[in-house]
Image (tube, rainbow, N blue to C red; front, side, top):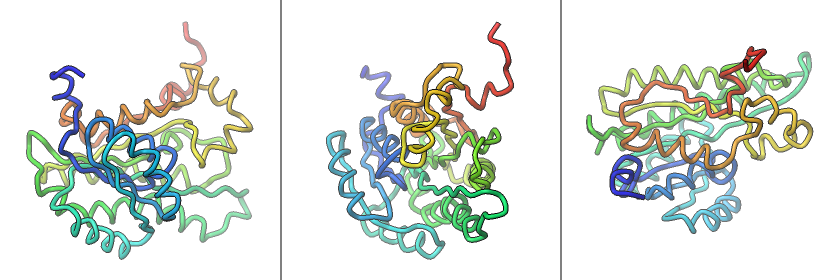
Length: 266
């Protein structure tokens, strides 16, 4: 990488946290941050899976794995205290951990709505809130700290599956991103969201196995997402190149949601 590109997109000396960083979108994000030079903490509920992910990601840079369940405000506060014991400051927070639940209307359990919204919406808010003191410590107008929330194109367009709370929860993530951007901007913390389309992940595995070709064909680029697509988007938003972007929702979807409704390419 040339010196000019390194200045724009390099993350040397930065410290990042990626929740749900042991697989799927989170692991793609963590890999991109490591390749750009950041030190990265990945967080997930299951210690064994975290350890396996650290083994895989360590080839790209300095990565530490932590096992934590961040589904409650109290747990977020406890985790923030744990990070504060290890680090003086934090530069990048990627709120990626998420949940979904599928069931037909009429059989959809109330507890499923609570679980999806607790993990997808409440946890990113309360974790961000808990980590703001560390995020603002080294933040400046020229080099703000970054919060990157992982939303979904299901929060932009209507999904074609019966996971009723998932799309609304991700739409809430997108709006939460804008609200946090407004409130944290004066602290020199940018807040943006990435809305991924279909990528190979545990959450998407069964759907892609059944309808992968059909889903790829829905993209004007005729493919599903690749790890570099997430890695590059996260690095952009975390780098100097993205320092004047806040309150935005970046769809990384091959046009599936963003060109929805088109009937012709003429």
